[in-house]
Each structure stands twice: as C-alpha cells, then as structure tokens.
Length: 449
Ligand SMILES: Cc1cc2nc3c(=O)[nH]c(=O)nc-3n(C[C@H](O)[C@H](O)[C@H](O)COP(=O)(O)OP(=O)(O)OC[C@H]3O[C@@H](n4cnc5c(N)ncnc54)[C@H](O)[C@@H]3O)c2cc1C
Picture 1 (cartoon, protein in one colour):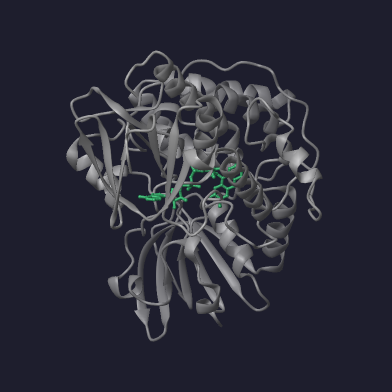
Picture 2: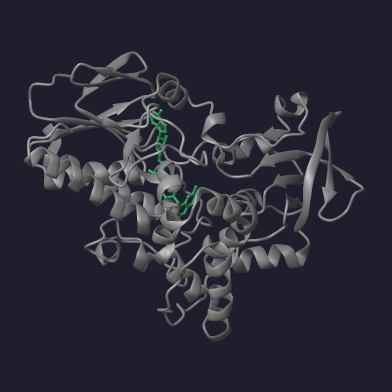
C-alpha cells in the first residue's frame, strides 16, 4: 500500500474498538487514510455482537450504548429509523447492536470510500521500517505510518487438568464463541467450566428440552441482574486502596441500591486503579475480582429471569469447586472436581464439556501469532500484571527497553493493565475518540505518528 497519499494508519481488529477509532480518525482528520484489518467474516460487530440469537441481549442498557460519547442519543435515533426492533426492559439484542455497527461502517465507507480500506485476513507479524510499520496479513503486506492494535480480549485457554484425549475430542469445546450448535447434537448433560456471562451465553444458546447444565467455578458465583428500572444514581466518592474501597462500598450499599454504588465505582475505577501500587492491584485481582466481576458484569433483567427459571427447574446447577480432572470414557467425559472448602473430589459423567472460563488472563501465555511476534521482537511488553500490553496514557505501547514505541498503539481490553475498566462500550467509545484526537493533534503539529 503506497505511503504517498497522506498519513496512513493501520488498525488490526475491526470490532467496536477498531471500527470506532477508524470512524473518529476519518471524521476528525481529513488527510488521513485508514486500513482496517479483520480476520472474521464481518467487519464491525466483533466477537460480542456477531450473533443472530434473539436470546443474546446486551448487558448494558441501550441508553448507554451509543457509539459516540458526545451523542448519547445516537443509538436510540438509529433504532427509531429501523422497521423492526424490540427492547426488553431497555435492552436490545446483541445482533441488533451488531447491525448498528455495520451501519456505522457503511456510513464511514460512503463518506470516505477512498480513505478507508478493508483488509480481510489475520495479521500475523509486524515489523518496524525506516519510517513506519509493515504488517503481514496472510499473503498481503500492509505498510503504515502508525499501527493500532484493537485485538479485543485474549482468546480463552483450556483450564488445567483436562486430559489431552478430551481436549482433542468432539466432547470438548475450547472456545465458546465458536460453538457449533449442530455438532453438539444430542448431548444431554453438559459441564460448563465457569459461571460468568460467558456461561450464561452458552447455556442460553444450547438450552433445549431434556438437556442439563452443570456450571462449575471456583466460587460458584453467578452474575447479578440489572434492575428492571434504573436505580437512583449514587454520587459519592471512593478513595484509598482495595480494602478501603471495599469498606466504602459496604457503607454506601446500606443506604443506596448496590447497582448504583457499583456504577459510580466503575466511573471512578480508572483513577483508583492508576493510584494503586502493583501489589494492591494484585491483591484486588486475587481476592476481590470475583466479587467485582459478578456485580459489575450484569445480566439484563430478561436474561436474569431466564437463568432463574433454569435454576428453579434444575436444568442448570451452579457449583463451587475446582476441576481436578477430565478423562474420556467411551463417548463421555468423566470429570472430577473438589468442592470449595472440601477435600474429597466428586466425579460425574458428561456428554460434553465447554470451557467458559473467559478470556485468557496472562498475555505471556497467549498463542496468538501477532502477540507472540510483537513480544518476541520487543516492540511491546506485557503490563506488570500480564493482563495485556503496557501502554502510556495515550495508548502508545512501551517497548522491551521501557521506551514509548513510536507509532504503535493499543486500544480496548488489551490496555486493561493501564486502565482496568476498558472492556465495555461506555469506556471504549471515549478511548477511541481520545486516541483519534492524539493522532490528529500529532499530525497537526507535523509530529511523527
Ligand atoms: C459475549 C459478549 C457480550 C458483550 N456484551 C456487551 C454489552 O452488552 N455491552 C458492552 O458495553 N460490552 C459488552 N461486551 C464487551 C465487548 O467486549 C465490548 O463491548 C467490545 O465489543 C469490545 O470490542 P473490541 O473491538 O475491543 O474487541 P472485539 O470485539 O473482540 O474485536 C476484536 C477484533 O479483532 C480481530 N482480531 C484479533 N486479532 C486479529 C489479528 N491478528 N488479525 C486480524 N484481526 C484480528 C478479532 O477477530 C475481532 O473481530 C461483551 C463482550 C462479549 C464477549
């Protein structure tokens, strides 16, 4: 791709983060050209919103899902023009939200066709050039002045203890985002490892008469539900380390709805996180994360009702414990786990095991070629907790020597080590706008990207 028609930014990953960064760049920087690189069939919806299942609802109210921080009504205005859509307690389907993102992509292409290039394929390696970067995408090469990594969450990794024969068999699904519903066929008893929103999704996708699900996680905690009507906002402040903040949360929930307290905490999370020492962050991840996750990542009220009814009917059982083994026995899997606070393991048989432990938590263990390549070449390094890539406030990667990597940025969940709350649209849309503003300001001063 030629360098001679104005600055060129390549964005790897065309989910929400990559798409919105592209749109913000095209809007605010008339000279810029953008290439969006995506390995999935669809550009825009990413992993979360590429679903046609009507049971898959957003887990954030539509009022807070506009793609643009300065246009809070943008999604609602778009929905008002759509012939068919339905909100349940203020939550639309994730598929509908995917259509919204596809619409934004079409609009961007209509407005700046000659400045936006879609490149389909997997970016596998990145190389610094004299001026800029070279990305290998399948058998193509994309050259750019700056690269933004919008890779989303790390792919899940299988939990330890599962026998290699199980991992290689059709009785095991390692990535719940790629469940082949047809292949699962007649499976009646399903062990789901994990009990968070990923488990909820898998169960809602696969539920059918006569099928039983057992969800196993260390704490056996289920995500809480959103209220049918949004609670009165809480406007208090939080300060100090994880233990102090926990105390302030407990105090606040004596007089306010816990959801409002967590929503406020979430708004403060970035500042709190940046003020904590690495040891405080580690303590939070070790001891408080399970509690944070189930209060912060909530089910829509409709989804919560579905899950409650599956629990009541016995179709879904949630257990607290640690998987200790899983071996193939004939066509079924014999799994064993140690219940929480108990020594003696329990065994049971399942037709199918699904890994719903969520995104991989340690970037050093990632098998993604582009991440391994980047770390091996020292263009980036893991953040001190290994949650993702180390970036500065602007999103610029820190290289292996501890210096800012010129023209190499990351956005989205990969930057959680720096910001913590960088997983959902209400945070990502602001990050996309700010990153585009940083690049635009640099160009206006003729600084290198
Ligand atoms: C099931 C689910 C439901 C969710 N529901 C909500 C919700 O209701 N509300 C909310 O605010 N948030 C929700 N989230 C959080 C969601 O992660 C964010 O809203 C947002 O979609 C993240 O976008 P992203 O672009 O950062 O990541 P992704 O959507 O994961 O996009 C990353 C993209 O990069 C591509 N990619 C990765 N590596 C390469 C490579 N080497 N080469 C080429 N392409 C590559 C991937 O194929 C992918 O399309 C949900 C998440 C999940 C998983």
